[in-house]
Amino acid sequence: MEFHSVAESNADFNRLSSNGIYEAVELHPLVPRLITSDDSASVIAVQITLFPDKGFCIGITAHQTVVDGLDLDMLYLNRWLTKYGSDPDITGNKSLKVSPDKGEAPNLVRATLTITPEDFKQMRERVLSKSSDSSKQLHLSTFVLTLAYVSTCIVKARCGEGDRTICIRFTADCRRRLDPPVPENYFGNCNTIFSNLSKARDFMNFENGFAFAAENVNNMVKGLTEKGVFEGAKDKLTPLFNVVKEPEGSVQIITVAGSPRFDVYESDFGWGRPWKVEVVSIDKNEAISMAESRHGSRGIEVGLALKKHEMEQFLSMFLKDV
Image 1 (cartoon, one colour):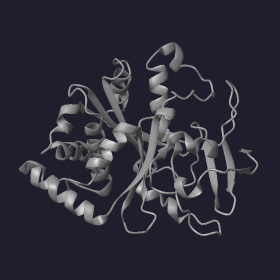
Image 2 (cartoon, one colour):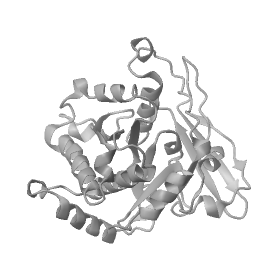
Image 3 (tube, one colour):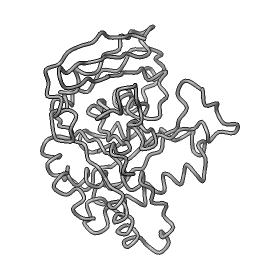
Image 4 (cartoon, helix red, strand yellow):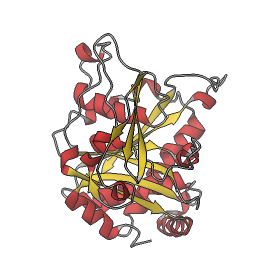
């Protein structure tokens, strides 16, 4: 473990810990960099940044080979697929060096949004009213509704060609789903990936776009609960390798970091609960973050990093149609 000494920042603490819009790069000085090479790497780095008379920030960076993987592995996989694809000369590389960033963050802004229990109730009603009779048994959990609705808004915010491919994907913890289950004190990666490919035009349909997305995400989750984690494992990554070979701009990838089940706002080091928790790396991987609402209202916080005009378009439609 590498521990960075305490740093000090004159950035606007109130703004960075709010839900408002700000430049994505403003969070980067608050997280440490891992020291890595081909044959060695720091496992985790921690940085504490003091905002005088305001508060402090704890920034953590973990290496993808040893992190638990429930949220960070999906982000690493996206970056690895984008850089290396299925080239056998590269995918066999055992280097521990962390892949470089794509350099997207300078063009992005961040925002945090909250979906309340009342919002979820209206979302369920809307999906069921648009779904076919055979789809009435949808398991519309808060995770399914959040990923489906936010993905629909992101696709609409980008506009563009309806023929572009939309790839939605998330990872799932395998430990309790194996027989026998992996012990709770297992340290490392033990997860699998679920993905869905469709066309942007299906999300852009004003009346049925959200219902279409909800049914797709529901089927992804059902694949985990009904078929098990090993179903189709041999070919699971093939579509993802093919996607990254597509021409730039023809594919839009939406992935998930975090989970409402992680209880990130329950962490208390003796100074009270965190005021704000952010997954900084979503601004490099076309991802969204999810966490339980900090207010304990059974809602979900969603973190976004989009281009400024896309963020403005996203916010103009978010929860306006539910």
